[in-house]
Image (cartoon, rainbow, N blue to C red; front, side, top):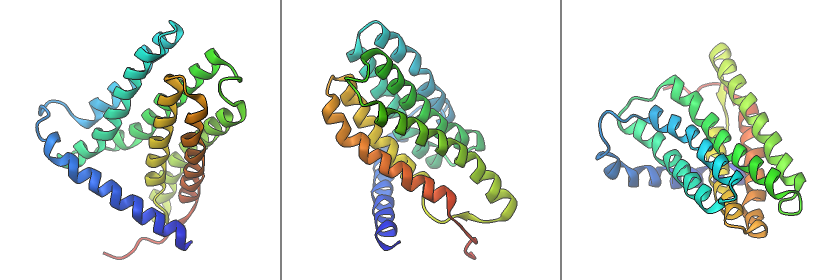
Length: 207
């Protein structure tokens, strides 16, 4: 467990540094715009992405995908900055990640075919994301009923998994399928780490 915990701590420090960096610019966003709205916009980005992919305009789809990924970067920090995190947002955020990445990957795979992107890798990513969605829901129920919490930073691993998926999908949209696999395969490893995090619980530590 030593290397896993050490890696988790490193990712936590990087995530904290990113959060601190975003604190100042996020203060200038209008007060009426909240994190849940940004998450919903992120989900809606999938419609122009699908449209432009079907229209054979992957570069335009790329910019909508980048916009959706950018919203993922700032919605969580914005909620914490304004201290208005909601249960709806906590549920919607990982769902939005999977809709944005999974649907985009599916359309690319359907349009380009298995010669462009390995079917095994595609189905592995989809199945792992499905498992993560299921375990995320079950984990909330178990935590509420038993008072236990996840031992590893399941959501942290999942966030970094999405980060690598984002880079890989961007490369696919730019017509670089071989290079994309350098990021998508590591994202599979992080997905497995996140699954372990969802399955591993411990007693809450005293305050």
